[in-house]
Image (cartoon, rainbow, N blue to C red; front, side, top):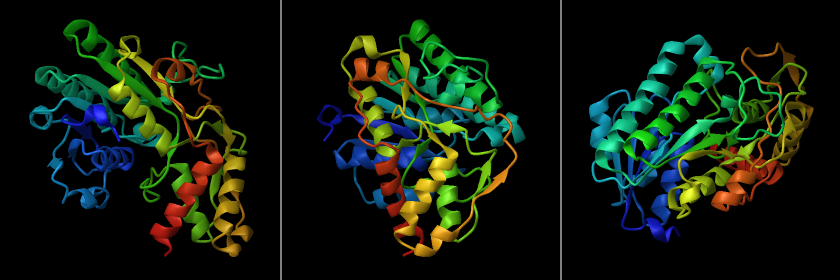
Length: 329
């Protein structure tokens, strides 16, 4: 239960998306009033359908690129979890203008609306892509490199705008640099599907997943429940020193793509032994990809008392179970 948020209203932008819908669910389970703003460009109606009968839930179909929609959504709101964005490095390379419009202009609209509505706190989804070409491991919040994609630029600009809105207008913000989040409701379909749901679906269909490169690239894969914990801690912290900064949101371990496919194959084979025989293919390295990603989570532990419960193995088991029940049963 999130008792400190009861009698408050939380706006979740992108609330019909993967991370947003999970946040809506947890807040509603704690009797917190939730407003969801989504234009359903990447979010799914079925993600919020179970909430529509809940009197504490309000759905606004609107676009963060429209300032009036942002002002409407912010009316009577105390806190904001800003998850709305166009994700995916490849998408941003193929269409940098739309990525910029949503992730920068839309973000600025939300900051303006939050300022005008005098919200107490604006917690937003930042990205590990901000580390760019920095080769240092683990990634420390104060040491970033040069961005490697239009998407990375947009997420870094978000951090700059959030900082200015605090110093200029007094809006309290916290940025959460997500590291390769996975879990239930993450869409396995579409050209820009994330690697874990995409590979899960391919294995379930006896199709060979394609690893970009030799499989040695590694990521700090982060289960959704860790991300939910971090968002709630960012919303509810009473530590003033924890505000108006950015945090890594991760588990703090890295897994290579080869190790990932090995684990997925093993867990899925428990449901269907034929999956053991599915081979792995290799393709060319993807433009804009960083070789290795590993987060330091010391800052989050110290200032927000963050304590992630799910490592890659138990997180993948939970995710695989959900995908099997959802897509195979």
